Structures are given as structure tokens and as C-alpha cells.
Image 1: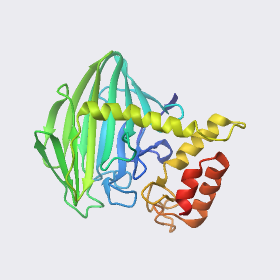
Image 2: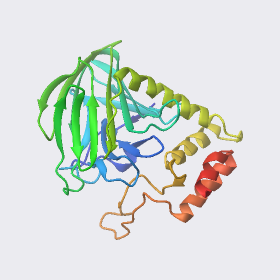
Image 3: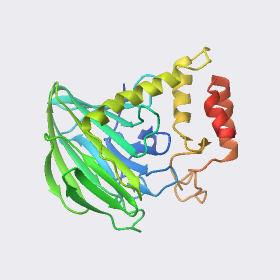
Image 4: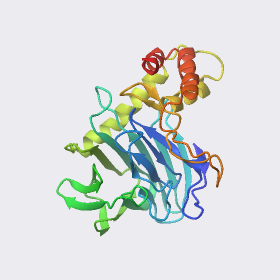
Length: 304
């Protein structure tokens, strides 16, 4: 694992510090401090459910981090896009494993974020904060508590947060949830966020979500280990291919240029393009890479 600085500047995390999660339909971006700051639901070109990436003061986010001072180590699992983050405090360490899950038959009918937290050593107190986004202050989200969990409504998107009994709610209103979770070595807890747009929402059990984290990990591994390429720098090539695979929109096979939207090349710049679509030049480069690796299914889907 590599060490990262979780510090923010004026509320914004360094762009280079974000890690991406994908389910073949949407992409979520997680900062080094455990805050999920960008996730468009249900599709890559949908409005964001969380938008702190673009609006630090008022944007939505879903954060998990120790209360005490900590240092961060983070890496994707080998040959996978399932992310592992270790928070180390003076009292102990915890591991956060995150995935946008797939099911046994591939992409799920709903969006599902699984966040598994495991006590590695000592005792760690965590702060969990959930704030729905306002889509650039154009909508008024609201939350309510139900027997199935905390339900968020953001325009046409409905999302449900599920959690175990160990979680202690400190603050709950229609715009924010703040909670406390204490884990000791050997203990584990799972948080699940499922979402749909203008459709009924299925609420899976935490056990099902937990299992799908590992199932999704296995699916990524099987894909990465099936390459025809056996040349130099194999691990680096696999990691690059996994990054490209994150950008494939499975319903159509299109390859988006980037998971973010309207970020200029420099501060104050005017090249403020929409990158969440397939740009011909970028897509051609990616298709060429997939063909070279032997990922024929992805190349064919992009051309169809």
C-alpha cells in the first residue's frame, strides 16, 4: 500500500488523490480521507448524488474517517478495482474496503455501494457523515428515517443507507446524518448505499452486500487475469487496463473520456468540456489497447 496525505485545501481534496470505483454504469470517486465526493446515479451522465468534488462548501458527500488524527495507506486489491484504505491512529488501525457492486449475473438493476470496515488493531472511533448533494444548488434533497434505513431523495433519485446496530446516530435531520462507529481488532461492520432513479428501490441485506464486495472483486480478477498479453510490465499493464475498464458504460459499450464533468485543464481555463461521453479519439485509443490485450468483448462492444 502507498501512503497518502489526506489534507484538504479550502475544503477540496487533491484531484490526484481520488480513487475510482465502477459498476459498469457509473463511477464514484473517493478521496484519501475516506470521503466519497462524486457519484452520478444511476448512469455516468446522470446528475450527481454526491458533488463535493465541485462544491466543497455545499456539495454532497459520504465520509468515513477516524475521529483522532490518522495517517492513510491505500491501494486497489491486486488485479481488481475494489479499493482498500487503511487508517492508522495512535490507538489502532482499521481497513475500509469499498466497491460498486455487481451481482452473480453481472450488473445489478440498481446501484449498490458497499463499504466494509474492519478493525485491524487496537480500538478506533470513526465518524460517518452522509450529506446528499444539491446538484449545484438546483435541487433541494431531503432524508427520512425508515425501518429499512435512512432514505435520501435527490430529485428523481432515491437512495437508502443501511447499517448495523453497532452504528450510533449522533445527528439526523432532513439534510444530514452524522454517526459514530467504534471498532476493535477483529470486529467488522458494513455500510450499504443502494440507489435507483424513478424506480422502486430494492433493499438488500447487509450480508448480501458484503458478499457482493468479494464477488465483485473476483469478477475484476477474472477479467484482468484473462488477458492474452504476457509481455513486460504485466502488473502495470493490468492496472492500466483496469483503469480503462472503469470507463466502459456496459449498457451500450461506449467508453467515456473521463468520469468527471466540466473540470478545466487549468484554474480559470475555458476548456470546460463535458467528458462523460465517448469522444472518438479517446475511445479509439482505448479500443486499440483492449484489442492489444485480447479484451475482445470490450472492443467489440465499443464498436457496435
